[in-house]
Length: 288
View: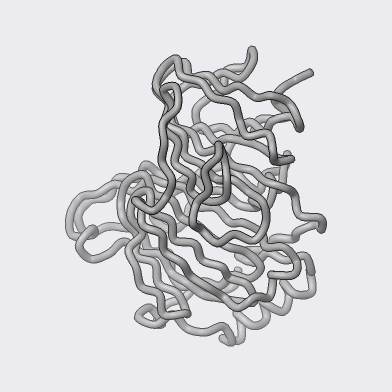
């Protein structure tokens, strides 16, 4: 039986000054567990005076996490959060019934040449939490479980895997793990989740007889033992979880189990009814 159901190749997207590789949603697969969106940012090189400027924009029905390998991004949101996202820290924003936020390169970082490299993901919320009050939680890098096993260094970003659990507040069973592998190292993917995948950031991996190309996402067969072997030094993000029981719709920055709720959110953003982002309330991204 094949160990890989399908392999997703990202599509390039321009986010205003820098490009990303969009992995989810894809034509072949809309979600992996509750993960409904995944972008690979960079590595992007910026000259002094340049940087990333994602203007204030809204979300509903999801949680976001930006996970950086290098660089720094200033996160501001309508709750009043104003914090630097640093490498290997977690800033988990639960949109719930509605939030607005921006992500920009800070003044100190912008003043010098710098690199930004990381992943941004959205996790769809269970229906009973889609309208929850928005929240923001910061977890410094040294608060996340990191451990080594047979040539692999794991860092649990969110959820539970390999007997370790991140302190991040989540709403449904999931795992999100960075794995840094030495050549020749191997591990077995967690089996307790229905949906499992990995995104190969860099390096070369093999699963069974299939070699995994860098910057692709293999989605693995349900219930099978998936042994991942490194053919070269590699970095991958492991992700998945239990699928939500209802279909999720995604339109622009909105995710919901209800099309009508998304239309209401679009109307509200167009009418300026979302709360403003303190310290970043002049610009905004208009509804497409």
